Length: 264
Image (tube, rainbow, N blue to C red):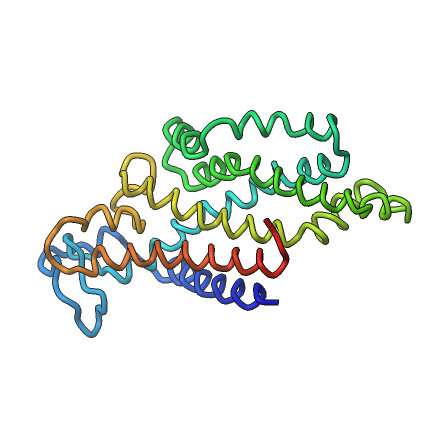
């Protein structure tokens, strides 16, 4: 299938960058050196330095866990809140199925980014809290996508056939649907949510109030520090390209999986 090649490739690149940022020691304070501020590219520093004399490449790698971490938490939280209600609602159908999703629909009535900013404003600058808020805001979308997928299966007699063969409701929901028939839906939305998590984290860090704060590294605050200032162009181009590359790769992988498995 076409989706099987793109997803591991995109995940591998981002995972390696994240591991490099996590494992390579980096001190954002000791890296400051005004004597090399905005210096041009050198052999040992292929992306040069920012306005504070910090190595752009090292900060780019150090910021990768901050960009991907909230998205990973968001995937777990969205799955925990939205997966089971979605498949249960779809398998039961009717008024009862819709009623099960009313609490999530109430959350979904709040604009997603507004809900995330409200939670971020009321809490500390924690990547975990940011990821949890992002996942909670996305859970209604995941639940609705799973409900629609299961309703399509129920319409052709798939659910009734499984029940007729003696499959219990818990086994049907967890194994036959979530781990089986609905797995492509989960993969597609997990990739989209990871991409959305990158956008959320870098946007809030760029704004400077709710995201990762200086001197800690984030692609967003790297971009904010260097935009509109003369000097090394890689200081702003590199984090911008990192954001575009990560979001583009994840969305492209989601699209390929969606096309391969006819997921809406």
